Length: 184
Image (cartoon, rainbow, N blue to C red):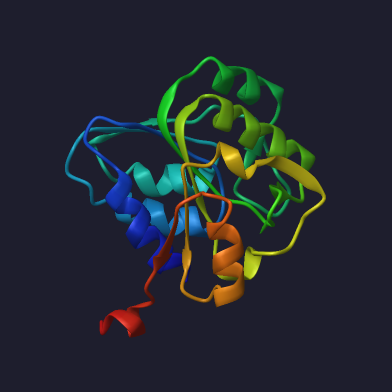
């Protein structure tokens, strides 16, 4: 599912754009696709695995705001990074989250949520990348309302009733076909 979502997301990236990528396995998949892009791009990420992957592409100007590593994860967190991010303006933010319901997007770490909010506030357009298992659940810390999103990209596992409820919210949802559905 995550690879399929990344394959749709990569089509949203244009030459000379600046991107925020936070952290997570779906964004790791996207980074593996970005590494093959043959045009100039600026990527700002707090994920050290994404940074490592993208160092392989000379077309990518890579910015890592720094911070302290989150235990058991690739994320760098902390106040200096948040202040740095608030001073930037990026074209696009690919956001991930632990949960999404009809009211908000949420996550489990208050430090990570602060960083995600800083990226959200500094981005021109925000696209949420989440697999269908994250829908109709809520984590403890709210990142934002759904109205802050330009689009949601998910896999085709979201049920018809939930598709209708989210469509009624007016946020475009793109369903990434799994390779088996696409005949690949």
